[in-house]
Each structure stands twice: as C-alpha cells, then as structure tokens.
Image 1 (tube, rainbow, N blue to C red):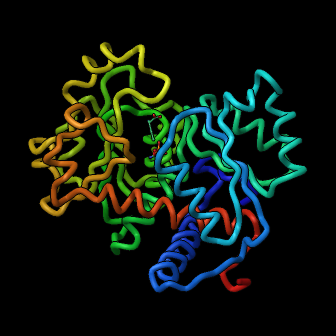
Image 2: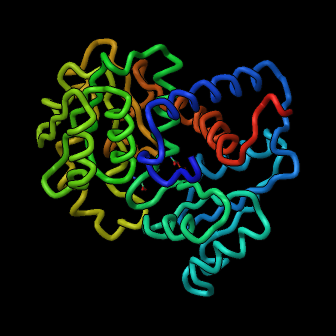
Length: 307
Ligand code: CP
Ligand code: NVA
C-alpha cells in the first residue's frame, strides 16, 4: 500500500493485517508501553472541512508514535486557489513524510497522491472515508464478529461513509443491505463492486426490509458537510429513514448500532438508540486512533518493533 485514498487500496489480507497491528498498538498503549517508531517523522494534515475525530486521532496518533503533525487549514494554505494542488503536493514532499487530507472533491486527494513523492491518506472526501471504515471493521473484528456470517444494513445517505463501509464490508465477506430514498443511492460503480464482492447485496427504499435480520445497523448524517443549503429537501427525503427503536426492532436482538459521528440527534438517529445498549459509536470513535496509527506505520514504513 503506497497511499490510502479508497477501500480499493486495501485487500482483505491487508485490512486484516492492519487490524492486527491496531490491536497490538491499542494493547501497548493501554499497558502504558511507549513506542516511538516515528521519532523525527512529520505528517501534514490538510483540512478543507471541519473535524473532531479525524484531526484529533491523526494528530494524537502520530505524537504517540513519536512523530509530529502540522495542521493546515485548506483556506489558510489556499489549496487550489493560492497554489495549485500539484504544487502543494510537490512542496510538502520536500519537508514532511506523509500527507493526510480531508477534502471536498475526491480528485483533490488523487492529485495530491499523483504529484507527491510521499504517502497520502484520504481523511474524507466526497466519495470515500476509508479510515472510518477501517476503524469500524476493526471495532467489529476485536469483538470477534465473523464478517462472513453477518448482515450489515446501511440506512440513510448512500454517499462517502456508506461507500467505504459497504465496500470494505463486501471485501471482508459480509452480506450488505442498503436502504436509501430514491436519488440518494450509492454511486453505480460502488454498487457494482459490492454486488461482485458481497455474498448478498440488496438495495431498497424500505428501511425495515434492510434492517430485517441485520447484525449491524449503520447510519450517518442526512446532511453532509457542504450540503447545508439542501437541508430542508434532505430532511423531507430522509424522514422515513431514521434509526429508532422501531427500526432496531426488525434487526437481530443482538444487533449492534454504528454511526461514524457527528450524530444529528433526532434526525438520522434517536437519543435512545445512540445512547442505548446496542450502540458502539464511542468504540468506533476510539478505534479511529488505533486503526489510523496502524495505517501511518504501514505507509511510513515503521514498525513497533523498531521502537
Ligand atoms: N467520523 C469523523 O470523521 O468525524 P470528524 O468529522 O469529527 O472527523
Ligand atoms: N457524511 C458525513 C461524514 C462526516 C464524518 C460528511 O461528509 O459530512
């Protein structure tokens, strides 16, 4: 793996390897063992959009591995305005060891990766959020979930997080059901890959049908960053897709509820479900740290055994 721009940069084997490394890093951190395999190394973190989890976990993660992070707001460096995206990539390549970028257009991370001589990580684009999906399936993996025996139901908007979650879920052998209102389905190429890789793939407008018999129910905001002007039409379109106790009642009694966060309580998910006993959203958030540390180590060529 040279970059992590999309789930297609992973294989089933490399994802499972990253889960092992993440588990090792998590266990060492909890045991108080300090490792510094990235001493003297630096990451540039470019953010064109707001973030809590992604920024903190990359920044804290690289510090915990002995390195440093430089946070750059997209507006501050004028990515694509003050300076072209290729020129930013070429300059950063002379100073730092890796680039983590949260961008509006997926083509921006692709251009950064094409022009940089250092690894580039997609920290969310309009098309994918691969770090989120890795942390999510690591969260299930460490609970002992057998991916080949599980049904994952995605309920809501079929955009960036959905793409990465259903693509990685399919790659790992899970059955996938996606329920979206018309016009908000996953991208056609993503659907085709999920149909190819997953043992079963159902795309429906019926949230109850998707939830029926599910082991995992996953949702995300109905109004992604940058879509704020579409708020009223989206609230209307998604009104029948709230993850609430009624929907959860169609899933297995043991079903887990996942959300990438930030949650919009009372919109895509109710307080009762988000804060309820089936919710593992804070485990997902915690595991962003461990999974991304594994990604950084892999891309920067470090190993905890070097420490
Ligand atoms: N889930 C996620 O990426 O959260 P942030 O937008 O806060 O980084
Ligand atoms: N779909 C959301 C995910 C936030 C982590 C967005 O793009 O805003």
